Amino acid sequence: MRRARAMQEDAAAGKAPGGQRGRPAARAIGRWTVTVVAAALVLVTATAIAEAQGYRRPGRSPYDGYARVRVIVYPSGPYVGAGLVTNRILDQSGGPELVDSGSGLALFGGWRLSQRLALELGWMATFHDPGPGAVEFGPDAGYLVLTGYTGDAKIYLGEDEQRIEPYLQAGVGLYLLESSDEGEQSVGSGFQAGGGVDFHVASHVDVGLRVLYRGIAMGPPQSDEEDTFISALGGEANVSLRF
Image (spheres, rainbow, N blue to C red):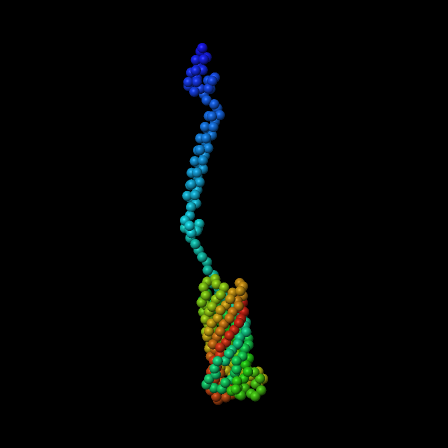
């Protein structure tokens, strides 16, 4: 009777027979459920914090807020070059017509002082047929050689770190006109002005094109005639090395 009464009391209290309170499996499942939920909450919270710390507005650099330093190296130093040049005679006034159009070679060298400015010395020799007024150079003059020794300033117009650099150029020159056979020659003075473009094809190599107007006051040798003012348009294709 006592055992039956105890069993009834245990049943009424929700205990398992034999004095055990509920099943162990049910209690274990409950503890794991609480643990998993807690872990999930911790993981979600940590993820949210990490996303908040790593969030950046679109378009912003990860280095925003840090000082930035940009180093710009301007080209400078010496350079030398050589090219093929042609001089087309536009007009000859004030005296006899001395030369026809011709072509030849050019050498030059200079110093790039800054991003914008360079000073250049040049030598040019072009070969011309004598004009109708070149009788003072002798009946067997053959061809005439126009030689120029020039000094120029070049103003570069391009932006930093570009492979193509246009420029303007102007200067003065000493010019000689000489017969290839007779050796007679005359001396004149003049100026040149124009512009060109350099293409940086390698770290120290440029390929260039330029066009220069040349105005030269030149007289025949041993003559009382007035000097002839020669107007010529020169074109040049060249290659230069920068050091």
